[in-house]
Length: 333
Image (tube, rainbow, N blue to C red; front, side):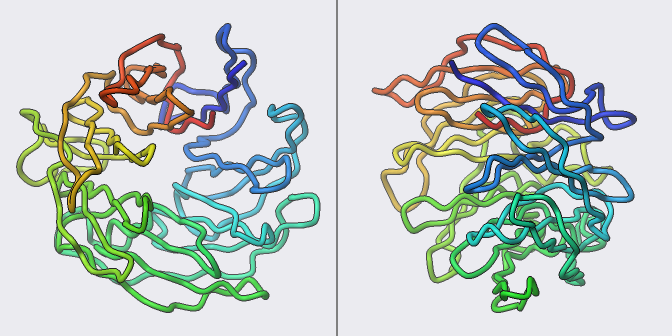
């Protein structure tokens, strides 16, 4: 049986009530939590972590039994507003969180059982761009790498590489600039390249291992794909594409497009991704996740998760079933 853990928005941000546990026969249970818009597992321990994407940002932890949250392990304050992403470092000793509205990165020490210990660092970004949505830094993703962390900052048009010391302190090693006004959101490494969704320019950026920009392609070719993103508040597309998440099986790259409401399929058979097709999905696909030949799509505004079967010959996904979930924003198969 495939089990899904699905986070989403609650309260004034959405219609959800916590983390949904979904089996093949539908929603099995709901774990109460405040706007768990991003969830992630510990790399070795049976522990689940979630952000609380609210003004007084927090992170929370649960022990897992048979893959299901079983016991609450406590929480920690992030020191920044609206944390949107988190990850556990490679050693399994630290939890790193991106505070989107707070413009900062926080680090918490993890205890031996995976519970959240004291905060060991809080680093504030000051770099920002010229787009109205870039008046300040907006870290949107943290990715654990060997010896450190990558931070993708939408507000600063930048990818930061930090070293992470044994004391849980971050040390800046490098800043990789993205094109001005692109608004990098999420990053996916595939076969020595780094693919990045650019939320404000509606593109997929491609970086080499050396950090140099190899090129960019439109994330969507649909009618709502051209021109700059809305100058209005986040979440209002203004009729333009705001690509969100990426996933890949090595042969194909899948990109969720909010605005056109599609998943674009790209072949990874050249220097830059080659657009194959786009498949219509629900309203505002905020997150996608691959599980073997199934692609799951979290349609935040149409309150559903789609399971799509990928054709092994063409790489194109087709809808297999739809699960009703209020305000879904992240899926963990």
